[in-house]
Amino acid sequence: MLKTRNSAYLLVAALVVLGGATASADEPHREGGHPAAPARGEAHPGPNGYQRVSEPRGWDARPQNFDRGAYQHNFQAARSFHVGAYRRPAGWAPHHWGYGQILPRAYWGPQFLLADYWLFALEVPPVGYEWVRDDSDAVLVNTSTGEILQVEYGVFA
Figure (cartoon, rainbow, N blue to C red):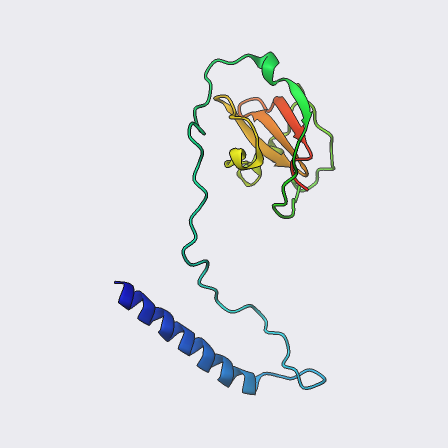
């Protein structure tokens, strides 16, 4: 199977090289003799041998019963993480959230969930709560009511 996979990679690489050589002869040139930028990028097979970081032991041992008072805090994060651009929900303006407020449903859609919360040094959320990202902050929200239980400011740079 490994031999077949390697043969397939070599065939794809040869086709890309040959296809690129023929295409470059037909491509329009910009001033200075350089080819114009292609309309879209070439196919990329993805990382080779990549393995996702494994979850820490007990990462999903969410407490059923918990002391709300122990969670009700607004913290400044001890460390900031660079994870990419953030796009807030359409039509919403920046807001400085705090525990006890209600986070609108648009802010805790699937695209904002922090499923790998342990990677950002966030606590295990209790049952019925999820960490979501809002700009540079991480917000612990009740997924039934939208009530904010905790905020970590500055988790994302």
